[in-house]
Length: 315
Length: 134
Image (tube, each protein chain N blue to C red):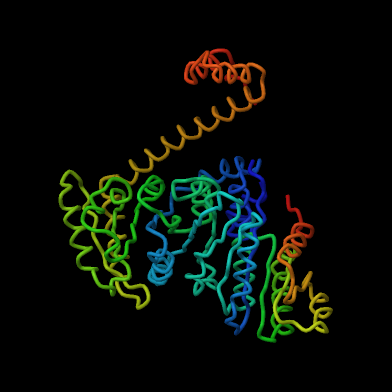
């Protein structure tokens, strides 16, 4: 495909268009991913997550400066929410990164979640592949502002960074399941605000309590406005990367990711097949009527329908 | 395949810090189901074109209230042409005298929306005028 050839040659317009195709689940996107996949696997993927307004975009802005000093080529995927009411979105992350707009080695793409609830969009993985094949050394994924349970980023990034602000919760909040369990590095941003020390202690106590692990996430204080802590954070990211690469953790991590990818794709393919096979059929409508009349329960109905259709056909 | 979303770059060009208008527009377009990328204030024409390319937008809407529209807006359309990205629809809005509108249109600005425009008219214009790319 021409678009793939252009992308691999470093044409950023081809990259931008390919991202749109993947984002739109365009018919050609499958072919694009198929052709570029052999060229992927070189980029290191960093995930940045945290509540709205904690400073994720501003922190990325600072980090990019530090990374660019080492002449690394950088791709950024910045995800913001899609309105569940209108389908529209305001993608405002790159406002905080506008100093890099004229740097040809930094490619920033804003994406909306388009219905996905895990903090990133369904197309994110594909877009990471595109940026990777394009030749980016580092791909940064910024999630939407998250609450407690949007943990999809951890399945997609090699290093996951959680950005918090001082006193955003007491010592009980940090014990809870979900978001507090996924970071490889914790950042307390806006550390010039009162309470940064208390938050750091609370988080450290929680992290020390978990002894059955090989990597102990460091807690880094940053003040993005004054560019404090960025270098330290970058050193910690590199330390984590070395840790991953040392005992082949990274390879294992990525193998796990591929396994999950395949399972998820199979799930989606089968879901679509079921959808296409039964929606609107008389048998399906009858079954719904039966459920309405309490003649059958939904689970038994689902089993009966599945037993009666053939899912081996190819669309 | 997902229904293709219209992607819009809401841009502020030059030394102009007035962003209330563009924020109202951004919100109206969001409510119309579009994906709106906002550049933030004080962007150069080069930055706007680079963002438009990276974001693969269908439309650029430039807000300008500084009076420098005759200098800055043609630079944007010229750069787009140079990059081969002149299939992007470019519209402008803000404080722009009636007598300048024809000049701007000659430079490739598809339409100019001055104060008093209804957001519904802008949305309708965008939907009718974007080039369907496939």
